[in-house]
Length: 306
Picture: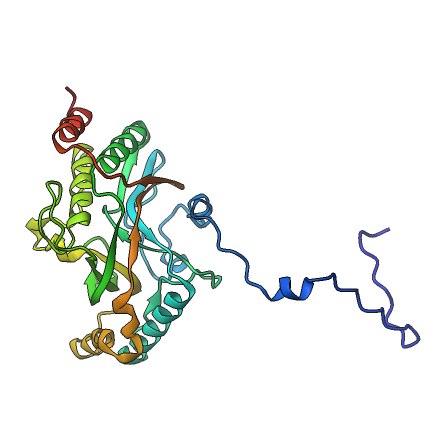
């Protein structure tokens, strides 16, 4: 006997009676499922690897920055942001408007959804794409966790400050991004100097110091002409083409459009940093009220030895 027996389609058969609906089922079916906890996203932060070779056809024409090498661990430090449903829909409309301004010759891909249509979190990078050896990855994570936990910024917020086009120095892609600024840019502290993004600058300095200790490239080097204070951003789209100046400006001016005025009031809460090494994501929470002198001594001892 087969696993499933199918009934014959005879006109003499009476239709099956409808199933009884349980009391209160109407309300349950119409309600929305509660959001998943953030830890769930950490467990499933990576897609299934389709190939260890660099095959751009599997990634919308993108090329792998660091070719896969056995024993090497792709690594990234970033702040994760999960837009609300309203924020997601607003950004989706913004990207579609930008695509109209760019025309049919340029395809603007979105970071908002996966290939299956699932909403994706966005992020603020705190490192370049790094590549660690198996022998150093655990030590790297230990130093990163200590440096972030002891930076003293505490939980803070950033807000959208405009749109920009950002040509990646690490790939052939041009990113359509939301520039961000600290919601408390005038913060006065022994830990933080006055800047557009004082808290992010503190985190970036710590992350770059650890990267340099492991002979890894830093993010937003001043020597490359990048202004780190204003370079922080949230990528929302990307293209392999190079839009002309007129099309780029039309897309950037959308930030001032009344349809997207609510974006100006958004606050992105920053309560920790994600350290992704291979397919493993570690959440490092931000702590406040750390003594500067003692902390800096501990940080130096951890990096370079006492």
